[in-house]
Length: 158
Image (cartoon, rainbow, N blue to C red; front, side):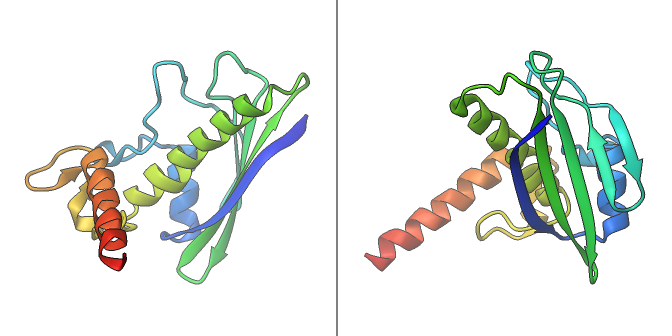
């Protein structure tokens, strides 16, 4: 088994909440963050050591050998989270590894992060929801609005 991708980022919640979110992504019905594509399957917990380690089985049926390891480190009232993707030989072409890495980044460093109230671009967390609620924007609309704000700032700077 070879490490093919890894990312380390801070996450807003304390480590115990991050651990709970990783071992049971559907625990809070109103706050689903593990939005899988049709070509993906829900992971199983291979190993869990509270609150510092979670290992998932593959989310890709065509790569059942994939393992995703989460190292959870408490940093004050927040968490430093590292995910690492491991694959057996044969390692797929670089483009496929990049696709898998980007997908994990979206799930962990976007969806999960936004679920815990991180900002999307310049939008405060109370405008972001993974589902439309009242006046809250959907996650995709919030991302688009954040990109629009960023492009407007860039245009003003020119």
